Image 1 (cartoon, rainbow, N blue to C red):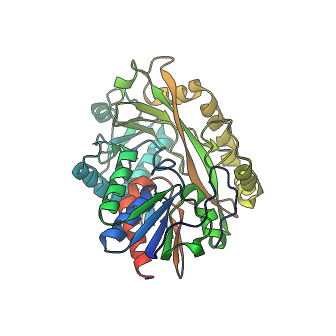
Image 2: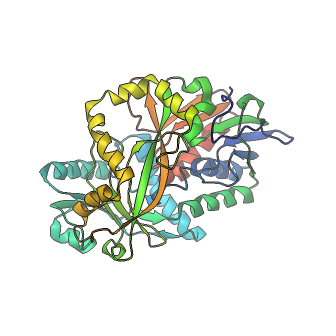
Image 3: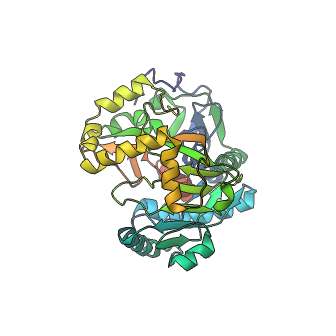
Amino acid sequence: MTVPAGAEGQPQVSSAAGCGVFDVAVVGAGCIGASTAKHLAEAGHSVVVLEKEPAPALHQSGRNSGVVHAGYNLKPGSAKARFCVEGSRRMRAYCREKGVALEQGGILVVAQDEVQTRTLEDLLARGRANGVEVDLLDPDRMAAVEPHARGVAALHAPEGASVDAEGYVRALVADAEAAGAEFRYGQAVADLDALPARVVVNAAGLHADRVAGDVARDVRVVPFRGYYARLDARAAPLVRSHVYAAPDPRFPFLGVHLSRRVDGTVAVGPGAMLAFGREAYAFWRVQPRDLAATLAWPGFWRLFGDAGFRRLLPGEVRKSLRLRAIEREARALVPALPPGCLARFTAGNRAQMVDRRGRLVDDIVVRETDAAVHVLNAVSPGLTCSLPFGEDLAQRAMAKL
């Protein structure tokens, strides 16, 4: 299996340098790859992790809101629900054990009308089916959790938390290395068949479909840029932890929310618009090869043929261009926010899988060959899922040895 040469943002390096054959080669040193390596090495297997960047967690795993999700919004019985609920509990325990910054203040999902209240009731049922601690609050009880949030009802998930995402991945890497795993940075994989390993785990995130080759011919990564603003010093004290709007159940994007990070910054966002490259984090940055690949994918045009999706787009573009558009949605949740309280902050790209029919693939997708395990879809809450998901991938790889 060969990755097409010349991907912008993906430096071309010959197949992994070095001598000797490892039991497993892991492609990608984000949270999923690092967790997989940790579990493999701790089981006594020789592991090499190949990462094209000079350090771990420089893309999806480090460019996110830093939320440890509780799992109330995931379809019961799905792989994502199972891994998220278990992962949330394991991740919180792991970070406390390792000294990784983590603040557990819960998540409040706010409804503004009867339709959104019915959405919260659905989320309550999902959460309870998934074994998540959740409760439906009236406005008085809501105010006790987030005094400045306003709505007709709210779902409260006290297990939600904030984490230093990059610090968490570094801890996974340190554990993997302590158990004998080798990490090689600046190593872009050009040919899986030439890797010095008996089995390969593809955890390449934004480039996972390219690394997978023919295994992923019916799906493609279509990158969506999530842009965050932040509250200024006047407004940041108005949010204790995480305040979310009731989501639109038709789409996997959660809309504008306010999230207090472990450093005290309150991130506001994200918008969710098409990115013009898999690693194009600035609004106007274009990576021509990536954009051409997106536009050539039949599923992309079928996705944009959905009337509901087209209605979503103008607002998402406005939120990427204008702070005022983000502020308007944030003030619907926290009306006390003063005018002009937002400053520009950061952005990250979501590796959203889209199939040929134009459907946004929501659940985790893993495909296997005789000597490879490919993680094709592990979008949010992939960070929260990473400990049990990495363990599962490690077991899949060990079964091939």
